Length: 211
Image (cartoon, rainbow, N blue to C red; front, side, top):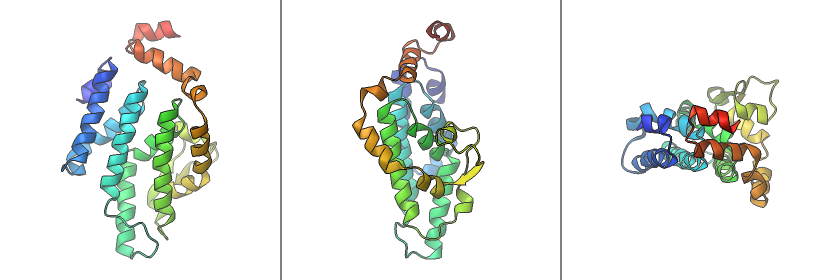
């Protein structure tokens, strides 16, 4: 299945692969049973040319968040053990590459992708903000070399914690602007190029022709 996601030139099979992982995760399967594949699926799906593949990948990320954080508190007056479990759960999501996926998707050229990522980040912001004394040191993200790091103009900062970046970003305003926007985002030059490349089945000779 990973070969299909990484090599198949048709969008439909790649979408089907991501949806299959989401279905497995929604079922009785433990997250640990898919550990070896989830990081690759999130990375490949999040960087796909097909916007529907990216949307399905964000849906997978949402289920992964729910599965991983389901036993974690959403209140300030929690004990140390519960805060530790929350930190461990967030660290695990970080190891899966989920946060990089969400931040990169937040600045995607396709509006539906941005909207979905923004909604998930708002949920994470609420969770981290309502949990006092969360250990930020284990939730540090590397800004350098990431597309989202350039977008938020944090060139002078190498590392930053997840709760901090969630507070720096004005996610509420982003949500408002995304709700107001329409075709001028979806039909951006970058989005159009990705659609062309996807339609051209990502073959090397066609990529040259597109440029």
